Amino acid sequence: MDGPGPLGDFLQARRALLRPEDVGLRDLAPRRRVAGLRREELAQLAGVSVSYYTRLEQGLSRGASAEVLEAIARALLLDEHEREHLDRLAAAARRTPRARRPRPEKLADETRDLLRAVDGVPALVLGRRTDVLAWNTLGHTLLAGHLDFHSPDDPGGRPNLTRMLFLDPHCRELYRDWKRKARAVVGNLRIAVGRHPQDSLLAELIGELTMKSPEFVALWGDHRVAPCDAASYELHHPVVGTVAVTQQTLSIARSPDQVLIVCTTPPGSPSEEALVLLRRTSGAEDAGAATHRVHVDR
Image (cartoon, rainbow, N blue to C red; front, side, top):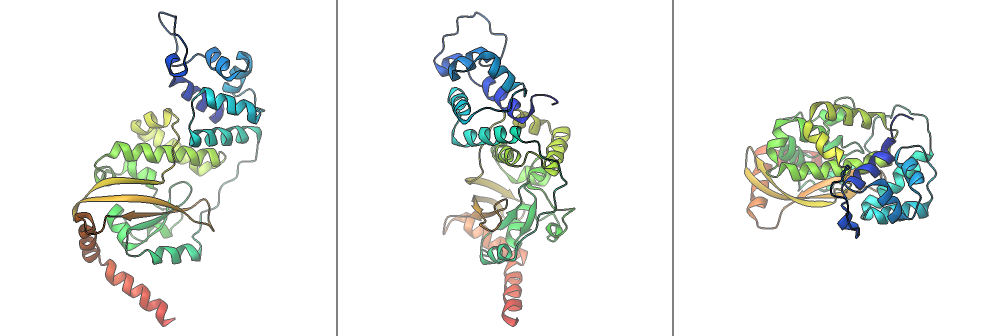
């Protein structure tokens, strides 16, 4: 095995974030040689031997029991999402499946119907690597109007939301608080890696961002885990100006690795008026009407 692996990396990173006083220990040493807790301190808190914990962190032991993982999670003060991530990493470490080139993700007809059903708000469907699998006209115009609307139709050239956020100047300028959005996306990407540790395309995405974005490297290095569920962001759109939206992530029952992202605004707010204006200028109303007529004619 080369290096500690994802499980060891996660344990090291989380241990480095804790100080003795965070877990009720007295720091009697005048100068600590490591960031955060020492391995022996963490092992003591978890009730395991130092040698066993060291082997686990170094990737030399793969058989941690549920009880040991729970004890380590408590010692590291992990929250619910981080504990689930730890369990997934430990389960992946026990397996050695053959790495296969993933097949391109497909959009089910039911998901396309769902996307049409929310035509009144900006919406898009993301795959497990944050590839844009589809978007409606308003979602495209709000978040990535500078890209070809039909680009998600090409599996080899699909826009990737994470790549866009870090490497596309338009997307960087779109979010007023870009750092908060970036932290959220990276935290969610960590969950994807835990669920799909053998996904070579996901590994390629992370490798590309590591090479091209120092900001991604910094955020990726702290191993923080957090799902993107619902969050409010202020956007600075080049056409309609400031728009405050709540981006909500909805699970898709038929495709558990895919999610529907919808952007909502408070009723009667200036942001809602801005979306109405954007809908008119983008031709989204005409596009929606045309789609409706096609299905009626059928």
